[in-house]
Length: 407
Image (cartoon, rainbow, N blue to C red; front, side):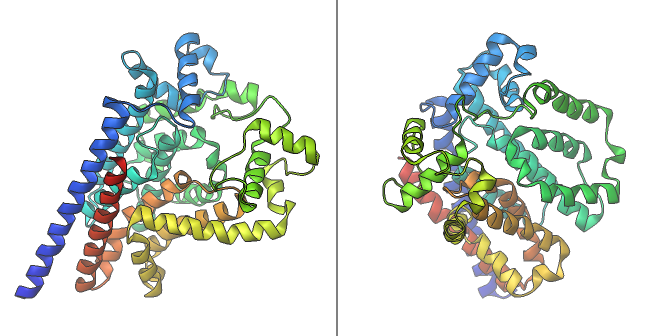
């Protein structure tokens, strides 16, 4: 390496550490607002606080037959014995992202420090790890499955079969979002069977994962579903109707994008326009008005891609470059790393009429982040340093903006 190359490498390394300091500083502010001087609950946090209170007051046996998002609330229960319920819920998610960063570190990926930088940056931007909702548990458990799946594709084996088994149990029973990702699960299940992944799994992992699954049996009997977050209503109105009305009103300029009408507003609309004026299920919303569905598909696809750029810096551009150069097509593991994100972009843009939420993409984005080192191993050295610099600069810039907004 000549002197000019050494100097450029020094600039690249310096940019990385500046970006890392900025990302960590932003996380310090997020932790302060979540735990030390907790901000009031927002959105779905209110529901999870009530679930945790019910679990604390009624006990686990009575809670099992209710839809209390039992996986997440039972993890928060020990912390709620000496902390405020909201803080306990948030603490669980902070511990989850800490575990995930440790998991990445232990995996010893190529160029792992950039994977850790991007994972920390994205986790801070997506907004599910410093609040008290169960999306973080699903995201981490499914991300571990996806990453281990790619390791199976590359090496024919998994490094953490015990963790993988527990992650499968949690991911299948934490959020109904798993239904949308089910085609990916089926491909993963094929690889598990082909390579006999669980042949060396320890008894403790079998017991732990079995307990996670068994906790949902009472809810399956009573409610015909796992103990997921209960967003059903006692009336004949549905969330699909509320989502659809939100988009109609947003397109008409009657409300900002990303907001929803109240249940009272929905009732008033149905009373005025009739029960068939809105689709009652999300499946029905797809074919209820094909013109609107197609229009919203392209709008949501653009909106989702734009959001990914703001939450991953130049990562998406690097993968697009890899596809353009045919790198991913020549490397089956890289191709499998990219396809879940493509699937999620297409499916969420197609089936969601109202606003797409970034948290739904978290598992597949974590997979993409974990695979960046494999592209670096294939492309030429000069481009690697250029891409690393772009990642550091974009991450630093977006983090600095985030710090400013937090203040």
